[in-house]
Every structure is written in C-alpha cells, then in structure tokens.
Amino acid sequence: MSLKIEKLNYIYNAGTVLESYAVKDVSFEIQKGESVGIIGRTGSGKSTLIQHFNGLLKATRGTVLFDGKNIAEKGYSLKNLRKKVGLVFQYPEYQLFEETVIKDVAFGPRNQGADEQQAMLKAQNALRMTGVSEELYNKSPFELSGGQKRRVAIAGVLAMEPEYLILDEPTAGLDPRGRDEILNMVAELRERIGIAVVLVSHSMEDVARYVDRLLVLHHGELVYDAPPREVFRHAEELEKIGLSAPQMVYAARALREAGYALPEDLINVDEVADELMKLL
Picture (cartoon, rainbow, N blue to C red):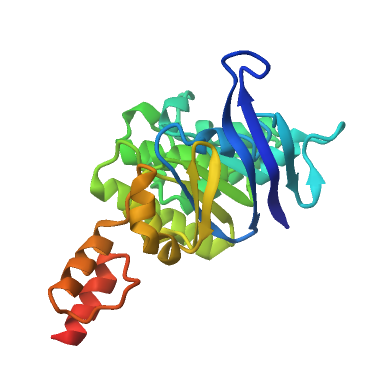
C-alpha cells in the first residue's frame, strides 16, 4: 500500500493575471509505515501539498494515487480515503467542540457510521494510544492544557484508524517539554502500530531526530527527497532557499575546524556528544 503523487500541480487563480503555482510538478511516493518530513519556508507549498493527500484539495494537474487508485476518478470514495489518510491541521485543538473529551474523540468514528458502543471503544483506544489519562475523559476539552488538547485532537484522528497520519506543524505553540512529548508519542505510535507518519515542520532539529526521509519544497517545487543526513549535507544550498541545517550541524563543523576529528554527517546533539566522548 502506498500514497503516490505524480506530477502534481496546484495553481491559484488559474487563467488570470494573478495565476501562481502553489505546487509545481511534484512527484514522490510514501509507503505504509514510513516516517517522512516535509520542510520549506512559509509559502513553499507544504500545507497546500498535504491537503491533496486525502482529497481536501483537487489537483489542477497531476495525479494522487492511494493503493494504486486515482482518488480523482469518478465514483472514488473520498470518505473511505479519509479513513485511511488522517490529516491533523496546525493548532488542531481549535477544532475541539464537544462537551467532553471522550465525546469529541468519538465524533469521527460516529460520523463514519460506527454505532455508539463502537465509537466509544475506538475513542478510548485512541486516547490510550495518545497517553490521555482516563480521569480526563469526561472533562471538557477546554479545561485541558495545551499539550493535552493537542493529544486529544490527534486522538480524534487516530480513532478513525488511519494508515497514514499527516501532521501539519503538530508542535506549534507548545513549550519544549510539550513539543518533545508530542513527537515522542507520535514516534511510539509509528513503532507500535506501523502507521505511516508525515510530519510538516519548520524545525530542522525535529525532522533530524524523528523522520527517516525528508522532502524539501521551494516555491512549490520539490528540491530534495532524501534521508535527513543527506539533505543536511547541503547546508549552504538550504540557506539559499531560506532554510538551514540543525544547529548541531554547524556546531560539529566548528568543532572540526577547531581540530576535533568528528564525522561529516552528524545532525543531532546526541550524536555530537557521543563522538566527543569517544575523542575525549
């Protein structure tokens, strides 16, 4: 099973003097179970791109295939697609609306046709997966902390049992502890249930630590599709398009220039610390 994008284009104001490409000739494939990051400066097309994954936006040109089937074909069930490809928007807690946490998480399964008992079971399972304590189930979601709300919102998508989880800036607005908790939770979910994770992020440190493959967008075009270690070898090229490498890439470079024999491909603090310990 895979999610495949072929020569995807999305044009704003097509056919007018204001015509502009949000996504231009983008092609890639994401297999079930993969962990993929998408980075790019603001306006690079990241959010527009991911909204094609489950048919929220329709391509101007090009094709989106899920499990080998074109999602734009007549008769294709976008409702079924959205069960398989779950999209968590930036600040998803703003979409919480029910009177209790458990009811909010059960809304998705219920809307997909599950009866009340099934919906509640799916909601409870999703809340357990996201580490939400049972004592919060009957509280109003608006009484929760920012990190707790974020977990509940993600649980609301997981309750629909997707095979792909698309997260648009899932740590936006959280403090460092809350950020780490959310990303560790997502990594554990992928490990435990084999779900594919697509992480849209502005944080080079986060993608360096949590994804196995990185897609880099610039003005709607795909300029890199490679493991993070390979992408961040091109720090100067990334800087030219308004991005950067993780801070540890620059720190390791400075240490090499100071005479420390560190490998060229270190991208996070743990790796740099381990190599320094070996040298010392």
